[in-house]
Length: 148
Image (tube, rainbow, N blue to C red; front, top):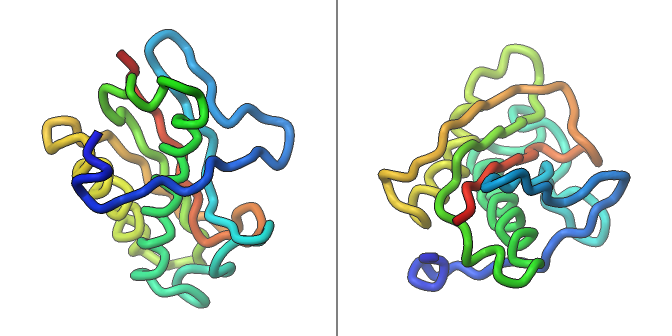
């Protein structure tokens, strides 16, 4: 994986806050639960992207959430090394009604994954604008990876 080459390091693996598994593996697919970026148990830069958080900052948070998802996979020895590619990304962006630039925030996720895994392994993506996310986070990222 190209993390070191890109000057990237994984954050600590997230711990579930609630009743869910951080990762569920079915066959050769690893589904990573939705990731929001927190500090001291609170969402970083809480609020709505168009009102409280800039698109640029939300894009950075989306990238951080992506690295956090990779850290969740890395928490189980050997799993990170088994990633063949990112298959799908779902990016939720908390916004006010009418905000139509959620795709720009999601670009932070797919651009990072493409940098890591290569252009031919660019994932499919869905981007959804929502009224609110857990802990008032501006961005939440879910990922699906294909494992070797």
